[in-house]
Image (cartoon, rainbow, N blue to C red; front, top):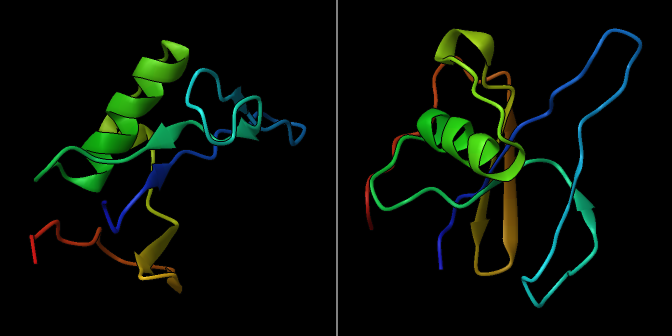
Length: 94
């Protein structure tokens, strides 16, 4: 199980936020979520969020179109939250 998930918060002028409805995943079916998911092994978080957004909503974004806002790490049920990060986390294996 990965310690990292990526999500995109895509807003329009006026405050609308893009959500996707989870389908055929078993756990959490029909929940509304931000586009995103788990990075592939060794995949950079920014590349992962661009790929996962394209896969879920058929929207292609360039790296310069997005910025890292928050990093959330999952470790055996403990969540560590960091915001205002100046650079994405490394994807080194443990």
